[in-house]
Image 1: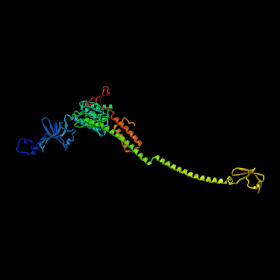
Image 2 (image 1 turned 60 degrees about the vertical axis):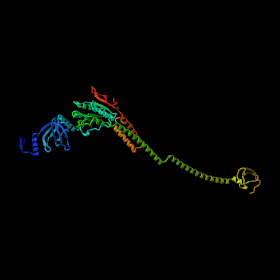
Image 3 (image 1 turned 135 degrees about the horizontal axis):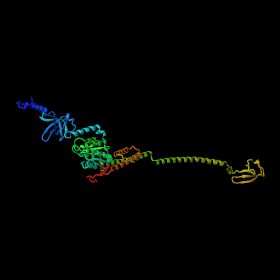
Image 4 (image 1 turned 30 degrees about the horizontal axis):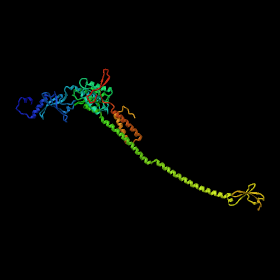
Length: 405
Length: 82
């Protein structure tokens, strides 16, 4: 059974399925390997991974689908409005009666070559490790001078200055003006990054521009820019306003911001917060020192209490010494008295032994003249001799009259 | 106590915070406490200087004919800016 058999007008009726199947066979035979150019619209990418779209030009439109297996191989993200070149076949989706283009490959038209080059460059730089996370340097915490590589007349520089000085009034900005689009923009941007490094005044560089079309952002996909960013001694923030893919500059940069405004917010802290933090820490320092001193004083007082007042100790010692001393003295005095008493006894005894004491009782002492010898025997005397008599009071001279032995 | 002018702001801030922490712990001798306090005061002074070290300025960097760098102030729309 051939198609022409039905076209030629047979009276036999076909089932819907038969007819759909016949149309399907016919379409697949005639449109097995076609190329078609059109604009994408009504793009849907459900979780299944298949891509559904409508392909249209000014006067016609066709439904299309790209199955997951092919979609996975795409090197760009399809989007509404994009003109694409599709290779595939045409068939009928008989369950819905929809005629569809079944795409096996898709390439952005016009951008095709450029896109391919971009993807190739991306792959090359990735292999060189330029996108490696370990290459990313941290941004300075509080840069005093910020470099900006962008167009002087653009919105980006105004946005950056507004945010920088709003957050951090004490920040110097050095702008290295460059073209950001058009021929030679990439080379200028790269030179700008190099210049700021060489000039050596800034601590971090923002490179970017406000949003633009894919074509406008092309400079940020150039290899010369990627190399300048990767060679930069200073950390670089890429701030390329874009809605679709990340640019190569974004991938190489140490940090990336979706807009110049976001980059400015990223690069400086809020000065007032920082100032508060310093002031708060300074207060904490004083408080901690005061507490240390108070604690030590309290500790000293506690220790002193344990030791006791040294003056009182001295006083107590002195008192003890004095008590001991006076006890010693009285003991000595007592002992002294004993000595005196003995002395007086002795003196009395001595006194009683004194011949003067005998004389006191009325006796007298007789001594010879001359010789002055004490006369103890009358027989030693001769009548007519003189003798000396000693009394308790005074002396006398006498003559012996008679001797009686 | 001198602090190198090259010292990073965040490092100095972290040092200051750790000085306060040490002092707060109360394990230092009085002598050490005083030393820590002096160090802290020097750090505070350093940080306060750093906070206002530069004045707000926007300059444009270019090269002259002989390739030497030139900077000139940028006129901006910002209020109070010159």
